[in-house]
Image: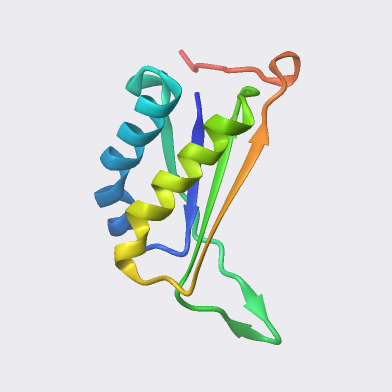
Length: 107
């Protein structure tokens, strides 16, 4: 893993960006590309009863990593999406506790 969830983008844009995001995270963290997952998250931010447009939220869940690694991943993701002129780009990291994580594959 890491698991990367993107909200504020269309499904098509998530698909378009997915290979580049996997490459960024793989290179910075030295994680095999096949372990990185991208998710489209259709969540909308609402303030004062109105949908906020042009804002990108990136949620990254992964096993604990050094702060410098988080900073570098965030920097490169922001640089990648800066071309899209978002009003704001927020990147959140959450640590997944190995003992509380299970992976189930259906047969």
